[in-house]
Length: 155
Image (cartoon, rainbow, N blue to C red; front, side, top):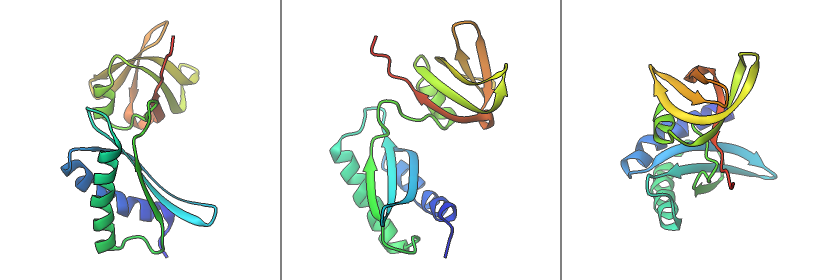
């Protein structure tokens, strides 16, 4: 039986081009067991946002493809949703698209003696993520970033 990470990678390779051809971004994909059930969760986005109709359209599209190819070795529950207002940022495209927004970046290893940064995203500069903090501008290579997400500031 395939390992979970292998199944996830196989499914993502099948679904990413399909989701993108429908005009959506595949922000993230989760494949995990919760309780007694396996879940395949797709988080999709679009410049105009995501609504129930978009989720249903993508669910039908990817569900049909998964049924035909059958890359998952057991039954699972398919869920398609928006990544939410504090969505993760994963690609250079994400960091450009959300330039000007407040973000939280966590690194794999410390930089300037810290692993977490909050600031205003400045986009990409010379293939690096640029962030303005209260005290400085910091550049990060994409492979330094463990996670990044938007922060909603209600103030």
